[in-house]
Length: 253
Image 1 (cartoon, rainbow, N blue to C red):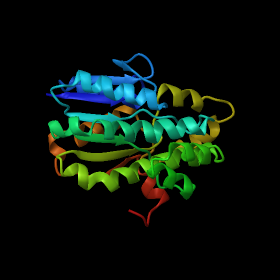
Image 2: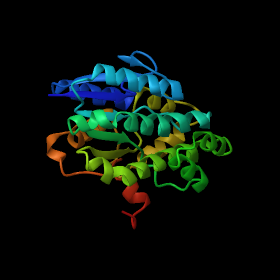
Image 3: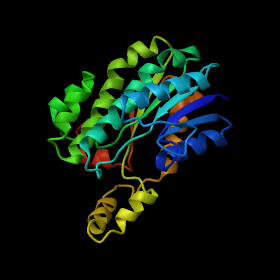
Image 4: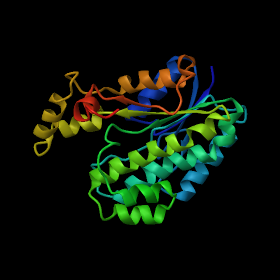
């Protein structure tokens, strides 16, 4: 049994992953903007640095794993917020915790999205990968929310792929999951919305497996990728979307 740290673990998919790990006997520290063991605003540089410092103070014996789950959805009109949390709030914590993760040859799981392969602004993605938050936020401000969201997840997944080898050399396995539409209390409310409800229901009906994802679906895959049965899986992006990515991109893999 070990200690895991998860961002965004207070609700939704993050809460399901936290509960799954705790059920398996692990200790879990939650980093979130409220109702967390470590309260931090990952949209700001100060909040990220504070979160890293607090995690290091709380995990002197090392970490079994780190899960970057905190994220802002495409329904949020503030594209700079989407950019700051989804990309920099994940990458900067992994980088800041790198030596602690190497201490016990820990596993890292990034929560990406099955929208990551969707078309987006390449200048936006390049600014993210270059670590230029100011430029990335400025470009995002000229974009629609959906490509800003999918671009943040594309860059996050590409960052993982680019850095897999160097982290693996220290014994750190990095992988990502790409959730599809997942029914949470927030998304369930949108399904009942008179403006968006019909479109959402049609989207759900198009999922090949015939149902939306559940937070537990994501938690089960997270548990596998973080655990001992996945020790040779490294640098992988696993879509957990009921077959939606395969349906939409049948010739790509």
